[in-house]
Image 1: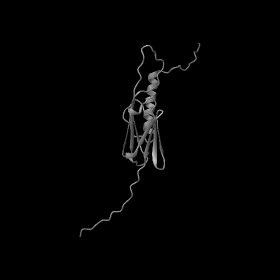
Image 2: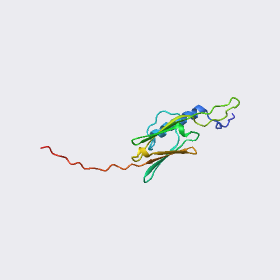
Image 3: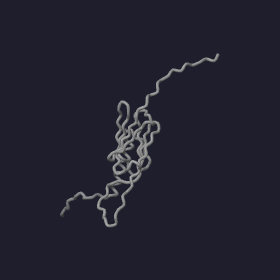
Image 4: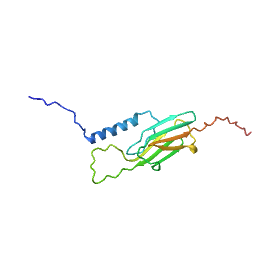
Length: 152
């Protein structure tokens, strides 16, 4: 009897790889201790970093291939929402595609901010495919004592 040695296939089946990626993404989102807020369904999500300084919070988001006009930013209480869409380039008829790893479609990221911010003075700048959002911290409300009056 002759044994044939097993070798790993060069390219695993694409559907199985995509399924595994989606399952990993779901578990990562469910078990992570990040500042993220549950997202609506989207086809992809750009990576984000959040840094807190003395007077402001800086959120950076990688958005290569996306124009500033295609990005919408909003602040609602302690949630920063970044949404947009990356449109797919058209394929020429005389070209044949061999590999395609770029992602296209709409995205939505919500981040719970670590401190209250002044939403009236938020600055957003897109430079070389990186969106930088500077959110100045607002002054925390001071605790006030209120004198109780008697109506006797």
